[in-house]
Length: 356
Image (cartoon, rainbow, N blue to C red; front, side, top):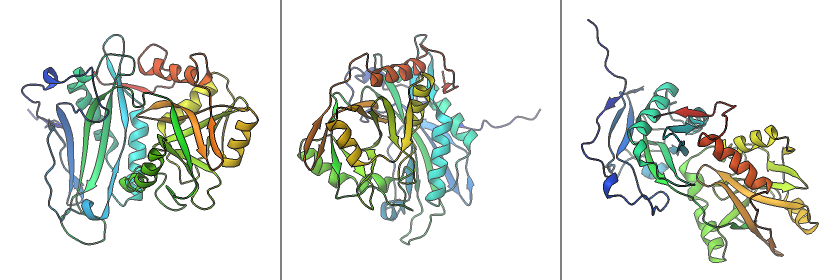
């Protein structure tokens, strides 16, 4: 009789930490579940993956990622429906985007079937960690980094790919105040703005800190060449409802193609709402606000889902926007998305992938 070794080496822990974890009072990204998935790239090939106890990473001071930032990551979520089943939201889209990031950063592609199998198995094992409540979910962080031990500027030969999970609630607890950033830049044409690599976020920390000292939550990034066109809001894609049209900056190579962004556009089209993907200038947004045609603005991303923008700071002062009510288009689209994720509405686009 021929037997085949399971593709994933599964090493479940003996006793879960969940009994000693307060899932009612969570700080986003600070609490982690019992297990982690890891897979190493050695001698030009991916090795057998393993799921084992979540633990710290030990590495040499000479590990390449610490010096040259060859690292990428993703963010995705899993949700529990009313029957207690846990499903992943559009994991194939995240997997495809991570492999686009890998190609840009001269890293090996991750086999999509192994990636998805590992995700589903890991979420299944730690499904009990999904908190109860309206905004509750599992936030999932796949990442890959160069782990060769040498000092030299070239692509690494070895890599580690890993996935861990955080039980979370809402990311933002209040509408956002954002500042138009007209000095510092997030991304340049030909750069890495369209992928999820660590350096993109590190470069935004200082200008974001300056904005926070001025009373803003996030920045509204503008293009690096002229600071004329709006690109993203902090770590999110940005939307404006201008004269009834759901409008978002087009993907021109410097903006991350968000999965939540794409989902919102699809749902808006499903309900017959006019949409536009195009260049959106600072001047246009300020003029629309002055003319009373800027109906709403919001950020959209995996962590926050939809984060209404209450105020936009600019050189001439601050634009105040009304907080969207439950019957606003912003909240209606958010509710449509949440209903699909939590199994309360038909999943017409096949976005949900069952894990448990």
